[in-house]
Length: 175
Image (cartoon, rainbow, N blue to C red; front, side, top):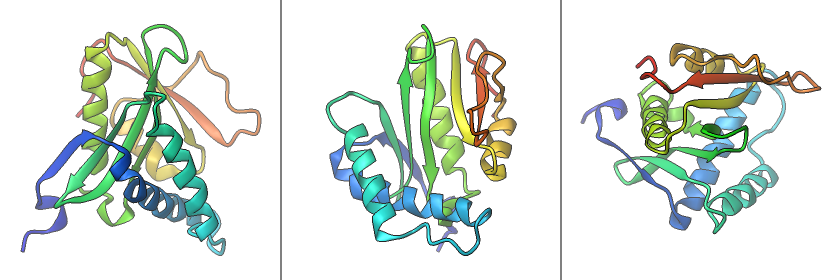
């Protein structure tokens, strides 16, 4: 049987039927990266899952936030959500990008990122922005490899928990 990263990965638009799977993988991913900073804290609790389920229910609802999901063998293993024109005209914001920890390092995040780039460029966006948790070194490294850099137009969060990054979209980003 092929390794998980060798199985076919499909990136498609997410819908309400994907809600539970996306909330579950987001809960697991968040718990994994938070444990790196707080090893004894229980981040994968029922309350946390409910909170993220409610948040994704709003995102997948009628407000029109584009959401993509990565599917491998009929299982949702990653999700990304973005918004446009929130930080200025022709600017896309990568609002969420999460991969099930069992699929980290298998190309799921990169595939979701590439699908977002295609959508942003097709919509005429010239730059993208995102906020990443300062202590999430794995995510910061991922975005740096893809060409994201600190955003000089956006100040750090007042509590300095997040780093604002930007990516010009005029030319293809590093793949």
